[in-house]
Each structure stands twice: as C-alpha cells, then as structure tokens.
Image (cartoon, rainbow, N blue to C red; front, side, top):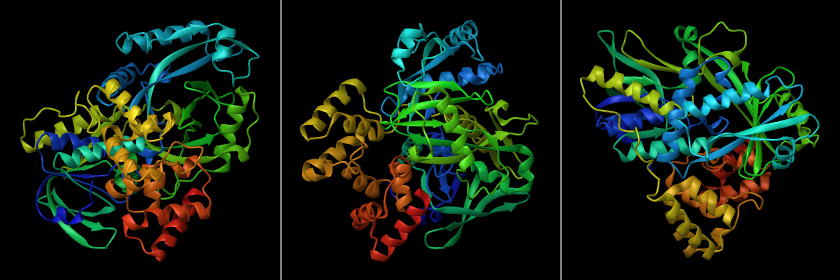
Length: 522
C-alpha cells in the first residue's frame, strides 16, 4: 500500500468516496471490483474515528431481539457467517457467557427463547456456534472471575471478533489492488457542481497543503460523525458516544455479556490481545466532533458496573487504556440512545450526492453494496456486487492447513505461539513477508512490549507498507499499543527512532511525533 496523492489529479473518476472508515472502505472496494474508476479519501488516517473505536465484534446483536429488530439481527448474522468464511484470519469465533442471577432482569426461559431464535436466524449453526446451557457450578467454573453469589446458571453463545482498524485497512488494500486511488490525509474542501449536480470536488492534501480539483461523476459521503458538520444533515442523524476501557486479563478465551445494574444496559467484557476490553457506554453527544474524549464519569460508570460482577475491586489505577468514539444513528425521538435502531439508510440529495447514515461494523459490507448499486444505477452500469462471498485480500487459501504451516515456521524462528497467532490474524498471508524479515534479522522477533504479542518486525513492516504517516497511525491503528500499554516518553522515543529511517523522519520530526503521540496516549 502506497500513498500517492498525485494519482488523484491524473484522471477523471466515476466515483469519489469521502471517508475512509469501514463504510467508505467497503464502498470503494466493491465499486472498484465492479470496474468503476474510484477515488477514496480521508482527511486523517484510515479508520481514524468510529471504525477503530468499536467493541471489536462481528456480531448479530443479541440485545436487539429485545426491541424486536429481527431484520437487523438477521442481516447481521448473515454477514457474520459470510465474514467468518471470507476472512478466517481476521474474523474468528468468540463465545460469550451470559450469567443468570436470581435477581436478574431477564429470566432463564426468556434468555433461552432468545438464544434459540438467535441460532435460527443464523441458519441453525453447527455445534461450534450453537448456544449451550450450564448449571451454576459449571458456569462459575467456566467464568471463575465472576462473583459466584447469586448465580443460578448461565448460557454461552457464539459471535465473532476482529481488530476493526486492521479489517478496514485490509479492505482499503483490496480497493487499491482493484484499481482504486486511495489517499489518506486528503480532505474534501468543497463540491463542484454544474446545473445543480455534483461533478467533482476540491481537495486538499493535508501533508503538503496542495489544493486541487478532481472530476467525479458520482460522490458518496461516508464521513460518519462529520455528517453533522452541515446544518442540513443534523436532522438526519443522532450521535451517541461509546467509551471502552482496557483492564488486566480477567478472562481466558471467552467473553461475557452482562447487564448494568444501574440502568439495565448491556455491556461486554472481552478478551483482547491478552487483556480485557470492557464497554461500551451509550450517551447522547452534542459536543465537539473533532475532539471526542474519555471522561472520568465514563470510566467510573464502566468500573462500577464491572465491579458488581467481579471478585476484584478495580479502580481507575487499574485502567491500562481507554478510547471513545461516536456512533452515527438515524434520527430518533427515543429518550435513550440505547434503544435507537442501529440499522442503516442511504440518503441522496438534490445535487446527486449519496450520504451513508448509521449502520454497524458487521453489516457494512451489505450496506455498501446498496450504495454501489445506487451509484451504478445513476451511471448506467450493469455490474453485480463484487464483495459477496469473495475472500478477503489477505486471506490465505486452505486457512487451517496454511496457518499450521506458518505457526511451525514462526516457532523455528523463535516466535512464541501467542505472537504467531496474532501475526496470522493481523496480516493473513502477508505474515510470510514478516517471517522473511525476521529470518534475515532474528532480533526483529523480539516483542516490543514484553507483555503484549507484537514484534519489532511489525513496526518496520507496517511503517514500510501500510500508509503510515504519523506515529499515532502506527501505534493506535496498525498496532494498538497506545491503548494496550502505558508507554513512557522514553519508550515512545525509542519506537519513533526505530522506524525513523523507514519513514524518513529527522530528529525534530521524531520529537514532534512523540509529543503528539504522548498527548493522545496520556
């Protein structure tokens, strides 16, 4: 993957996609596979906002059954199944435990009915994905971190997990390989119109300040929270802030779905890179969309709810990292954002520009296919969706056999099993390129942080091949160290110096990047 903003000025495009989160990535990828000339831009980094601030799940949304949103659950479960097959390296099954308490909000029979329906909507899955029941003793042993008093048993059911930022990056790599011009840190300044219809845009390269025009027959806006920056769009959207925190390891290989004692909301405790991801909050947001922050009240809420269920008594000092993001939802007059539908819609304005509203990480592929259908109809192009059932760009063939071979090669190079597992999940078949670098320079097999499964070889590989512009790109979205470790100033300086040669940074640039990164991570 190479960043080349000059390529935007060299030809006319059928489609300009503004916004490089998961919806923009799927739209650009599908459109390019259908033969359209596509440009994809983002004013900052790929997946730089909501698409790297999710719960890292590919899931049907069990809780949406309570609001009878069967259509959304069915769609999401269908997409979950498709992604598990198309991307076995970066989307993997994850089982969730749901404890039943004597004073619980949902009874055993109600939960049982919901889980049966969930399995049926998923297409009667095999044993690996089907729900199971455990009595109180069995469930307490399975989830030993839970406070055992009051547990009357529990269920487990299956969904799936991913690294959201890397999933988006892989889709952008696929779009680029299919012929799309993809440029991060490139901003839409204004649309050009002729006879009341959008015909292109004025863009600015945010790295060198160059302003230029491009021609595009169709324009799609997938800018998420920035949709509300236009007054006319505010009536379409509702913003909700979601906060997650990172705690020390609590769980092994299974997650928990729990109900907040204070307000009845569902939240997750999820194993992630050997630590525990807890979230999310769900509060209406009317603040600055450019600076979405984690407030002390957000952290206190999550800790309080977690501590209701655990044998531990976590405090703010135990929080390793945190992040906040904004969900864009369709406008609703419901009092609580928790009950607003997460389904998606497409709006097209009088000038022909298409706007993507709402949606979920899980169902973004199908929604993006509808966007491209609308674009193709306007262009008079008859081409079917290119992403339905298509293997991901970095997905190896015969995944189980291939991954066993790669794990063996990694072991011979001195890479432990945990790091090997995450290399495969994060890079797919490109893992071979990283192993070749380690074979040449064995010291690159060392972990960056001793407690986390990331290698020095990854720093160089990502910096060289994945459109990294800033240290924050590298340490938040390519490798999520900023939220998984409390990196010191010295550690940040060491990492920045290590990649400075690849990124052509002088000493002043290194210190500027460290300062900005340290501010974000603090």
